[in-house]
Amino acid sequence: MQQSPTGDWVTDEWMNVGNSVLIEIGHDPTRSLQQTGCVRQWLADARRAGYEFEAARETILAVVRERAKFAGRGKPPAWFTKPVAEAIQAGVVKAAEETRAPWADFVNRDYADHVTACVRGGKKRLPYAEFRAAWEKRNGYAGASAECAA
Image (cartoon, helix red, strand yellow):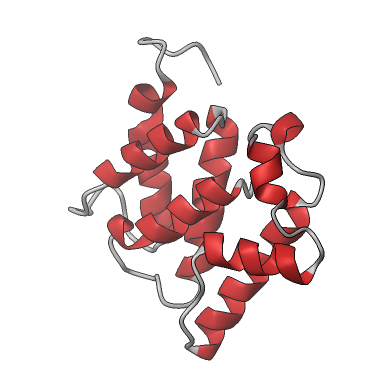
């Protein structure tokens, strides 16, 4: 990525990412009247979580791409806000690897599988925090999240 004019990649790149989101969900960005302001917030949330621009962009587009395969085609970008926020919170893409628990990738992979199974089966998915607590207990890491945060 080239040097940004304002020094803030959220401000400089949110429209480009917004257009990419529109393309992924089946809208023509040159003709669409869909609002993409939520993409700016997604990027700001990702930056706050420790992501660099490329990682934030790829995380957002991966979530939108996956959700658009099933029920998200043709929906407005704001429809993807909750799954994007969960992916950013879960650290699906490496945000700050040195502070992550060694088992974090496993719980994130299992959560992604859980969400996919729920979407395909028409079931309600667990919020990430509940899923992670149950996963830690089931796999012998009970309370490990609190230890890593301390």
